[in-house]
Structures are given as structure tokens and as C-alpha cells.
Amino acid sequence: MNIDSSRNMKRAAHTLLLKNEILIVENLAGLEELHGENFRLFAVPLKAKNVAALSIRAFAEILE
Image (cartoon, rainbow, N blue to C red; front, side, top):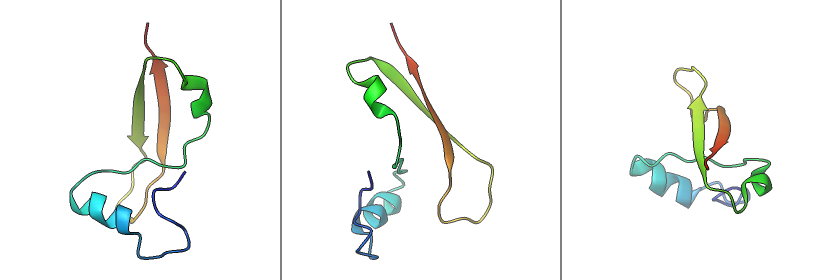
């Protein structure tokens, strides 16, 4: 899932969130496995400099 339409390159939601220093995590897979669970999400960025977008290692810890 992407917060902006890929057909509109103005990317209004991305612009607003990033302007307010709110990071965006999108296009995650396997989230259905977390439905109904209490969990903690980790989004660990890969090391990079001077990039507009960055891949992360995303994983969840299911809490009891």
C-alpha cells in the first residue's frame, strides 16, 4: 500500500508528512500474519547517504 497514487507525481501526502518530519513506512508484506496480535514493529534503515528513498529491514515482535 502506498499513501499517494503512483499516477500523481506531486505526492501530496509524502510531501506533507516529510515536511513535518514524519517518516513513512509503506509497501510492507505479510501484515495479515499480525492481524489480531499485539506486536511491536521495528523499521531498521539500511546505511546510506544522500538518498531520497531508503529500504528498511522491517520485522515485528509479537508480544504476549
